[in-house]
Image (tube, rainbow over all chains, first blue to last red; front, side):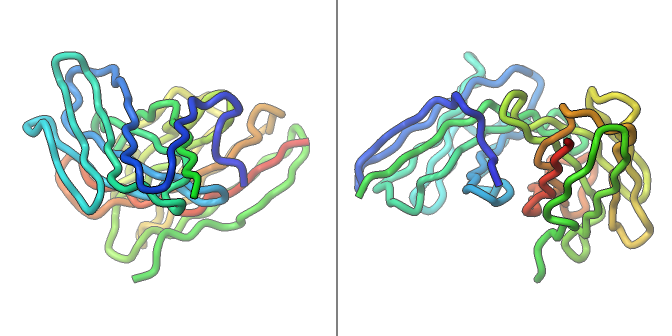
Length: 111
Length: 115
């Protein structure tokens, strides 16, 4: 099923490149942020999270950076692979599991 | 461990009808959240339940309602369906934790089409 908007910003990269996806959040009081990946026909899949007492967190091939001063998140994917092609959403938890999602970025990886 | 399951996966209804969607959380998870996803509005929070109590609610009309059972399974209901209710409805569950801020695991969604 369709899971994406018609006019999502798109990032096109070559396989092996590093990808950077950016996101601005709205609530300066939010203290928990998550990146999700959504493939066509599937629900969002957790990638990595970060709490406001950190400014960087690394996972396997992914890094999230948090800049609280300008309310900005970024997701860095190292050595991007075709299987990374999906829509990526940032989300902020505004309390009691209420996630406010960004509009999403479509990542297209060419072999 | 089985993931979040949602039934049905696809549903077609006509305007004015009502619909009930079901969500079974991951075993041991007590928090269930519902989201609506549309191309125009993106992912929007509907409501969240924990131990059969609604703890949080988004900005949707009263036609959207939900409930949670003692086994943590949840249902959401939409009455008097409108064309604009056509969307992917996603359910997410979270492990127990005080106040939230826990990772949410999403199901595959129910695709509702209103004709």
